[in-house]
Image (tube, rainbow, N blue to C red; front, side, top):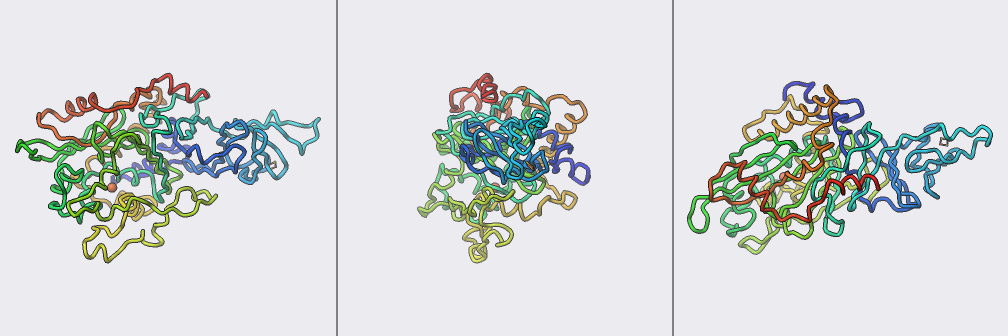
Length: 453
Ligand code: FES
Ligand SMILES: [Fe+2]
């Protein structure tokens, strides 16, 4: 991407930018439900470059609004969350979750003009443990997207938030970058250590997979393939599928396709900070958990420490879900582990390995400096697809893909499987989709109702 304008349009997310306006057409997963308590402390929320305030009122309703008080701009973060609204501590004006000024006690009753004052509040929906915000222009917001895992009961899902200190696109690209896995995460893995049937069996054998890429209605998709012999000695193909879904979602191939019910959002906080939101269906054994299966030496993959250490939660704009490891401490790289090839990267945690390399690119990667190779085809295509969709919205004003057709995302699925039929990759994908273990099919109506409640 040598064109500076392309790079800028892709990475900038503030109001009025090409990508920022595009993303504002979609519902955005912004907080965990548990972050907001009834009448509890308000939370500073940075979203698409806007400084917002989030709070839950006495009735349990959620407000997300500009943090500055419409009177004289004191931050409502300092406000009192009490009796159905947030009250500014400067002159006492009070606002409900929709931004209506409901009390103006510092103005004599005869001159009260609270009906004329409104804080800029966004539409909010809450579903299954996630708080969603709609920052777009419609008075009647679209239905919530039917990203399947977000429609499961909260008790059946694991939801993780982790902040990343870099632009959303370079963070997201780690998920659709198939050739890094064999190096960054498992470069130290000796293939003879991997038992037959282990999730790492094929990625450890061949580290430069070939793959196909295509545009799909929900974004982009790739199928990486490797020739493998099955136990009966037959020639088969090991497939790994992965997806990008508008505007900032991915699905990675680290799980058995039929059981891999998950999704990952790379939500821009601003141009240089991203909130990673990962959801997975707890009832199936899929995804990264499989990587921890023991190898022949009885140990899980070195460098795959299952936990991440977080900083104590703070109240600043960038204090939510920050991990201890960052550039200031070299992401806790262990040079000895790297030198001895105990851990190829020297960093002990798979997520942290991705976090380190993408943050190390700088706050916004310099696209003019890159040299993309054949292994970057999916990345190049996804950049182009996102850019074209965003520019097309700017030019036509027509609703972007999936905004009014939320069921579009139900066709997106990722994971791996072995095929002996030799069929075309797109036909294989369609067939695999029909054989998936899925939760009870959610309906479009439920998606609408979640917004209304
Ligand atoms: S600045 Fe908020 S009430 Fe005056
Ligand atoms: Fe990775």
